[in-house]
Image (tube, rainbow over all chains, first blue to last red; front, side, top):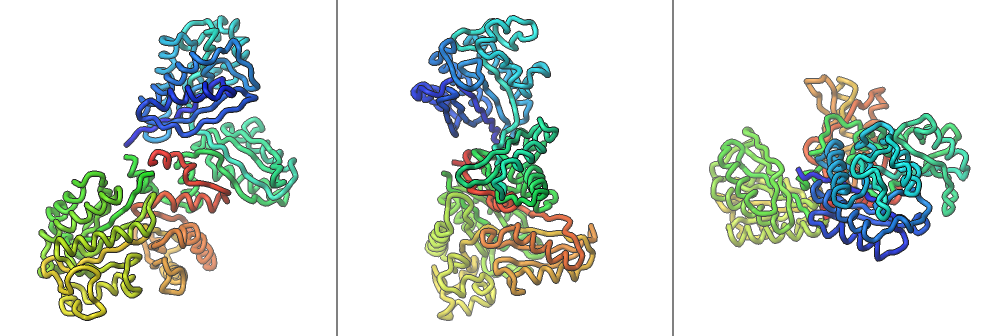
Length: 298
Length: 298
């Protein structure tokens, strides 16, 4: 069976399109890698690139992207609205098919070592690849950002996992990690009452005492006048789409409000949809190899 | 995007394993074809082979399989419990990905012509490839079977679509067609009362006034003591799994019986499961290209 890993590096460049294209160019020239998507934000001054491929090819492409960013982005001159600490700010590896989380943790370690050895960039491992519990959380790893880390990196507790305890003044510092696929999932309510969406969001998200792997906000969609619960499903194997959908539906019913629909924004692993079918159709003994298309990837 | 066609030929051999393996061998040696499955039944004296690949490769493999069967199976000596008229009895082409039904109809025509021209086998086109309405139905095409067709093939209404109006005494006659994927789908009831399963089956199937593309029977599963509605979903785009499941659930409730689960037997196109997720999660504006794995097949 083909092994497929996804990688979603974030680079500290959201204004100079030619720089972003040079980086994506370096990534997609690696054989066996498919560039799926990239987007950038001028006010954040940051870009997000998505690509997939066999583990070895993805590792190489991530390195080539980071190498190009280290040449073209100077962190000592960078400003933008999003927290960041490096030209290549974060590089998560995500298991998609035929690979385990442990394989992605291994990839993170290999890439971290290479970024330190060949590019002299200090690297922190984060999320599932973290070397200590407090480094699981990216915002903790990035605390102080580029400017603050110039001093803070010398503290014993903040010694990088790879490379020198000294910020690379041009390329900054990079976090490399492993995590499950993230699904951006919105649920639309049959009401214009923002407070209802906010209440429901609070009830399901980890920070409100709900599911630890779910982030959620209540917002109002101007175009439709509908309140929406906008959700990041950070680990669909722990908390699947159908559980979130059914819970939101039930919570909305308490206000006499119907759920009018839901949306997946961007990409989703097939698995997450098959999980939903299995749940609703009460399927017994279903194997993923029964999906015709899965046979094509073997 | 890769184009993928499935082909499920039935051969009139279910006893001599070496013959079946010679036929599957001829199929899988064609480059670009993946043999997914084959099974055979001694009492039917018949085998069913499933393979997929690009249209051109699938056409070639279907021809090679039929050619081998014409050499190794002698219809004048064949007996078995299943209706049949040829060494290669039926060859349906099924659109899976990036192809339309019309492409499969075209494949059926090309293969039919080749079987007639190169192997001197009379060919009827059936189902979506049929040249007349009465030939859509395979059992009508096969009426009289091998023995009866020796005479009947000379009747004006039964002139083959390709080849001579004379049965090939060794290889018989072959039906070549195009059809949607068939999903074998069972729904288990929380009762041992076979009559309830039979009543529900009658209500949903075409022959009982239900969905024309649905076949259904009520049976009793000895091992579990549960009644089951066993279903052939012959066109999941017209009547999707979730509609059948919800209807059976509702009909069972009328007897105070719960649905305890459902099963897909064998293969299903991804699409059928994504359709179910879309229905239950009330998804808005979902595109199949949002499924990560679909990007891998492009």
